Length: 100
Image (cartoon, rainbow, N blue to C red; front, side, top):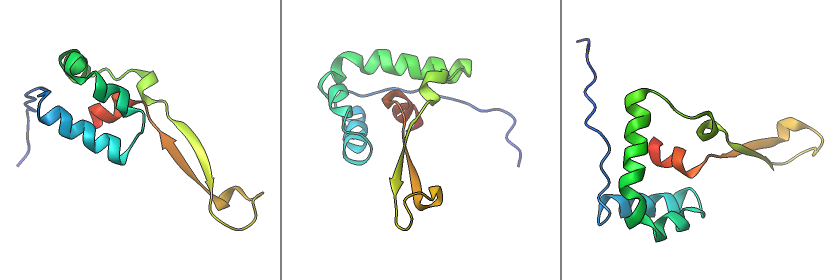
């Protein structure tokens, strides 16, 4: 079957449950900087939900949200050979939240 319409229900953050679980996931698996967001979660959950919903409804994802900081991590072998490095990219926190 072909789906001819996508129904999006919107993002709603529950600061007492869903948001905390989400923040805990991000802080344990993705970024240490999420701690700042965790401390202010009760103040930013609704504005952040609004921003995420607006991004999805308007199909606009800011280019700054797409920019990752890439760090080459040495694996082994000749350090002058670029194939002996693997890239690690760090995206902005808002991108990670919207991705989840």
